[in-house]
Length: 551
Image 1 (cartoon, one colour):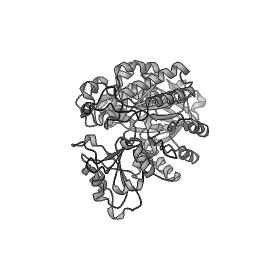
Image 2: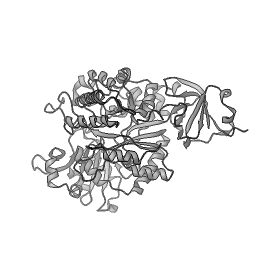
Image 3: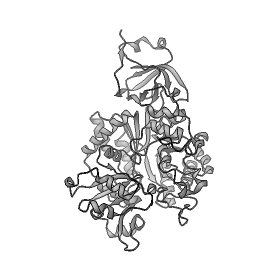
């Protein structure tokens, strides 16, 4: 295949060029500046696509996504139940189901409630769900995936044993007056509950993931990093929502059209990960490294901070496990050359993680191949950014997140610390590799083009706030594209094979509907992907427009 365009963005640098991109098999053979440079043998029988001034980009990479949960949302197995209050969220769920046809034994699952955006900002209780669903188990997953809200039947069916409840007291909300459980479950216990609730066969998982990937191809996504959702370490069987056998099944059926880079939870030994690395290692399916959680999230005051929360001076947040355990995991990963991805949102968690990675580099040297990552980095002390650059760790961030609760986040962190949040351009200016993902289904239906828009404007789709939230951190379009392609390939630890358009790399690229170099940032949302080519195959095409070059 030969693709002609006046606007090819290779990702090697920030320039666009006119030329002819030649694909042979699964790889990019060459990019020529003129038609006359193409060898005649490459022209014989070739499919020729002249896309005019439309921009060709490297395939988009979602560097942070939870695929199984996202696929269930896309399939409608998890209902999106939103609202500005507890009652509105419950009514949203009620309006999506036929109460008379619900199976009393089957879970009804909703998602996307978020109490920090409610007027009263008070956590919900099981009573509101019981009023409509007294006889079936119901679970509502928070928008950020860190909190679970269940009704009485659901709490009963989860059947947490007394010893577990006692050892995880902080995870289970109680009524102050009655000391009765409210049905709100946090952090690790919440994720353990989600694992119990969402049980499907491998075939069912594969069907949902296949359909979801078809949608991602329409968005121009050619690679995903599927990251573990926080498990509960006391479970007898680890369920971190990472299922390599499902992707293997899809690949055997020739239905895996997107590259999958897996990061299961990192346990205290590496036996599980290293076994999977040997078992699942193709060009489309790789178990790359591990993931672990340092802290929680700002909205529930579980992110680990250097200073107390503005509206809760009793707490700095906390690390999910003792910091020494995080250090030990980083050291173990470094000693075994394993890329490790650490969830760190609060500035204290970020500072400690960077220090541990630097210490690991000093003791073991950097990774032979691939990159460690810090995930989210929502609030970082400026003094730690230089250390982050020195560490070589990739900053894996989600541009949509900074617009989820920007009007109220200052109440948690104060006006001064608010200026340190999501400093995308500062990170780029100081040479830190910045990789974009979505963290779906924390957010849903966010495309890479929307990610680029959010990073460039720091505004919502309705263009709020005016001039952008802390506009000094707005990125230019080219830097944002690089974060969604070249830099994201570093988060995959696969940057030698994907992420840029170069000779010998896999032919993973897209054709946009317009020329992005001539498009204002406000019009990025009006663009879409017309073609997605992955592994040298056209796996999404809006219109058929090829001609065949005759002998």
